[in-house]
Length: 66
Image 1 (cartoon, helix red, strand yellow):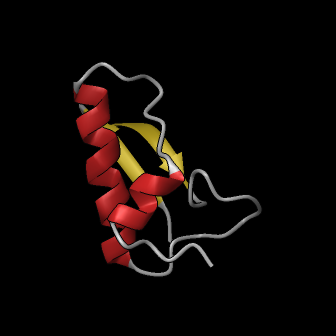
Image 2 (cartoon, helix red, strand yellow):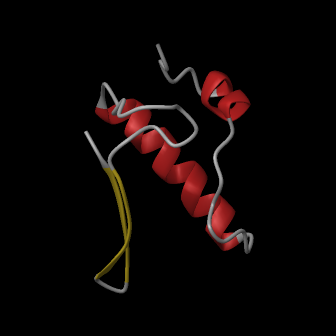
């Protein structure tokens, strides 16, 4: 499962792994991928480029990282 963000029909972000987790662990479901996508969009709108995701944010969103 991957997170893909588009702006004006153009691919801006393609994230195939869970951002702050070591290794190649991908998202296990669309709900988790969607939560991270919404968080990334929020950060981009607030001017954070690149939109960095912390482990604490994953835990808050209940994203399985194990």
